[in-house]
Length: 54
Image (cartoon, rainbow, N blue to C red; front, side, top):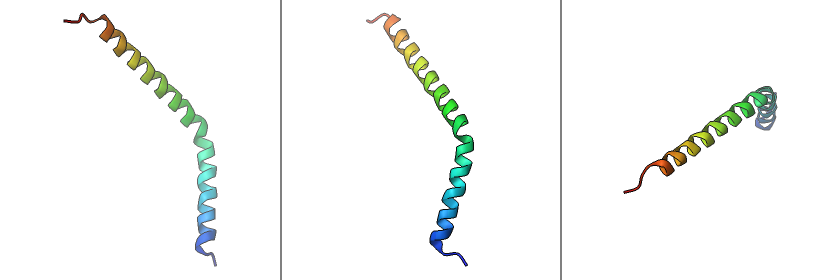
């Protein structure tokens, strides 16, 4: 029948096929998360700069 190396190869191919379908969605969500993180960090820096220092 099949050995371990053949089963591993089939598993890798199946995972690659499934990952290719999800890749555009994953990159889109990663871009959104990066933009949100940058804007939050920028707003925190602006808030710290605007606060009076004792």
